[in-house]
Every structure is written in C-alpha cells, then in structure tokens.
Length: 58
Ligand SMILES: [Zn+2]
Image (cartoon, rainbow, N blue to C red):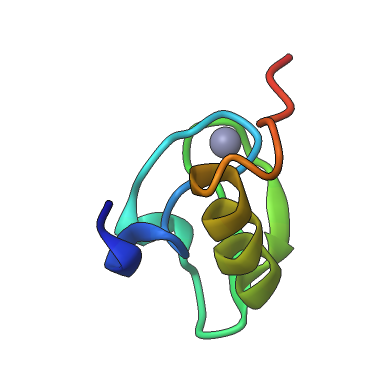
C-alpha cells in the first residue's frame, strides 16, 4: 500500500496517473474520464484498500 497514490488512482477504473490530478482539488481520470473532488478520491481509495468499499467496476 502506497498512500501517496490514493489521490492518483481512479476509483472508477483503477487507472493510476499523476496527470489525473489536474489540480490540488480536482481529479480527472486520464483513463476513463471520471471526474471527482480529489479529496473524495483519496478518501474513497483508502476505503477501497481497507476493504470497506468495493470498486464500482463497469
Ligand atoms: Zn478512470
């Protein structure tokens, strides 16, 4: 587990890219186009890694 990647991992498709973090506050996946608040993405990914939430895989 690398907590540095939690805000760079797409909660929708799992794509990891620093470029997905367009600004400090905004997340836009370069893989699937999913957009979200960066803080929410980080929190969601932590929950997923902890096994609390299953990724919503299309
Ligand atoms: Zn994505």
